[in-house]
Image: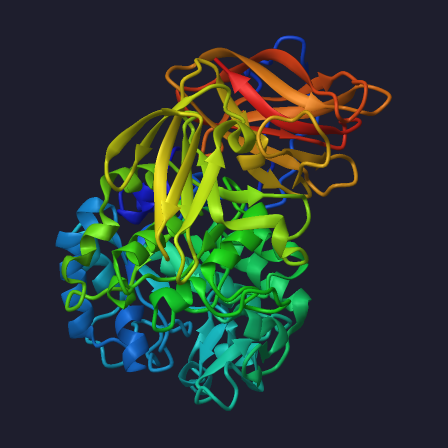
Length: 631
């Protein structure tokens, strides 16, 4: 059953999605007995590995469009009053919702919500609110929108602990008080000691945590924003020091796994304030979205581009979204992680250059575009959220990458990636290029060469997505940008053959970018498709007009002494199997600087297909992958 994020966010088929998509989201690529294999291929006995949650949300690419209360709650340092919430919801319904922003989401300041169900689950955002979650879910649904909720299922309100009649869902023999440890408070000593952390080692903890996710899912909530994860894992904050007890990485992984199992494809898990240890291994396995920068705070250019520019090993790894998106770009893409750059407030930027740059950055990185503006202060700035050409590439799942200069980690080599030059490929084979000038005082010219960076053969048409003008056929885009300005263009190659570059695809498991060999097209290739890598895959989103058998070419290098094999699988975004998994042979070549092309056929479905190439336990050897081509 094909249920998209947009269907879930608008409430269309949400109830059906909870039932029909309840199987574990991290299931491996299953074989389809009736699938057509490429000519000369051998059906693989082993499904492709999956090292991520791989939900329907991440498989669609870019994050959701929505509105959040942060723009009221942060400056007031208080929970938003219900009347103010309603006023903003009503404004949202008529202003941004018609353009796709069909979710209203709560945020922090939740300690004042003490009314709970018999199982200890909070029933409303704040005790001062007259109406509960169910009322507001229905209110939004009546207006074609959905309710997003900010709450961590690891929290237990002290009122539920004190009430001995509260029992764990499905376990009437266990009181809610029995799943916490005395004194183990969230924000211990600085947050009023209002919320306890769940102790995952105690009986009933799993049922409580999974029941919380299911509780929201059954209310029709498609999006759960789970915050302060670093505080749970280590009990520390980069600025505040010790903020509570350390629960450890094993307990953290257990908690995330339980949430993932309960969420399935019925609810999108947004993980906020994670340390992202071990290259985001746990977050990748069990979450859909991760915050990659510090809080939006007061907004403006200082939060978008300023602050600390270097990496640290704890949250936030990078201070601003420019650096955060760049540093975690190897973990983004379809089926991987959605990188969240936090909220935007248009009234906090100094000029329209900065406002367009904020939207352009979130768009090209595949981030959610989350407005925290208010009905009372947005004025004419709503137009920055509603540019139809920008929304079009976002809705097609755009997740771009910065220009990579080498295969080193951005955390250890800040020169390895370029925060100011980005590109991403759409399923129809076209490109989106974003150029930025983060300089505070000087006009700077930024350039993307279509052949050298994107691997485009010949020229391409270029269209500016903000001025809505065609710039004609070109072989590059080069623009002088004023301080804090940017440009977002769509690039359509004029060749009939569609070439999809691995350097801009989604990299799963242990694969990585590199350019340490010559002869490749574009800025580089993907390596580590080898036995030593954990779950190595590369996924391309490819759109075709009709179902059928298509010619396909794989441009690769194999400098080993014998042929290598890789496994190819084709699925829809909802994981429906189209063809494969199939084993494809890549003959040996002279060396790693020599590139060859293996040709064959592949069965594709009408619309968007996710073509994944990876190495299973039954494959042999290793390859570097440059691109694939289809007619």
